Length: 252
Length: 237
Image (cartoon, rainbow over all chains, first blue to last red; front, side):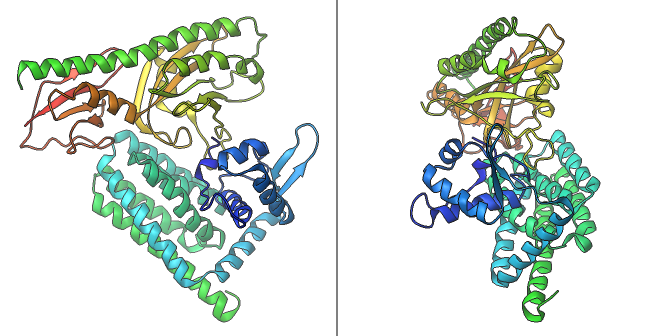
């Protein structure tokens, strides 16, 4: 199975809403970086089988994505469906405009709800990771935090931050939690980093990483969990603030 | 612990060792087949050359159905002309037909599978010996709690590829539980980090580090030996 298809979650495997559901999941996969710009999608029959949907459903989903300009289809040798390559200087702005629009359309309640799930899943995973980590695990976590520090763009940092948190699931030896973090943390992080959360929060995240590594290295499960929960709380606070600004005052 | 319990613990350790050795031996003969098959191909090798080894991989997968879920060849950095890295990996679960596993090998990618840096690849690559790695959560690989059995494939061109087989941790658990059904109740199989691979007691969970509570005495540890760094021990109740 493609590494990204394993993480797509389809709530229904049949019914009229399914093509939209598949399209939305593929769009999420692109937003969180499971698929990058310029990536070629697997052949239709293969992707449909991996997602457990018919090729007809997949084709409808792909057509929706084509109309929205998310993917493009190239014919001939080396052809296929590709994640669209938006021109580089514009992509950041376009991405953040889409994210701002999404943030405006969401509710404070749904952001709080996402934050709750994230705090519980990532925090609980950090708790288990602190109990189960050996020296090599901590070293891997340090290298991932280093990648975050070395990140040059918001996109670099978003990916590095997600990868850092996914590693907690790996250290906990928990397949489901790892999968849960991919979904929940990526949804929160992709929103957070794209709407400009990094401007003020980037050093905050760095010190949260440092505090979490220290707690895990010291096998301090309670501290590991509360460091994560506080960090998630900070992000949710930022997103709800921005959401309310967008709704109440039109522009942030 | 009485002598009977200790000898049943030994038999169980031997049984697990024998099961793992059968896979490693098979990987060694498959390795010879791979080298033979690739010998006539023009150097540098291409992905199309590697695709030819598929029947060899599927045969190994077939012979160890029920224990091994995935078998593949991981190419050394720079070994192929048309790809920096390549995983020719096939997987089959529960009697389903084997299918190719696509891994994300682009370093820019969020879910990049940096297999060259993973212990299951690096250890046989550097020691030149078979290696059993895990249990580990193989993110972006199997995405499961996995043990990987692997042997290095040394080519005449200086590159070292790795031929590997994935075993789900629950497969090892089944071996332990079934062979100890009548033996000592609280047996624990440990890896080199004192991490529980599997146990026959709800007190010790796979993937967790063994806590040696002061109140619990332990039997002598039986090293499984060979290429396994695991030990089997039992709590004195």
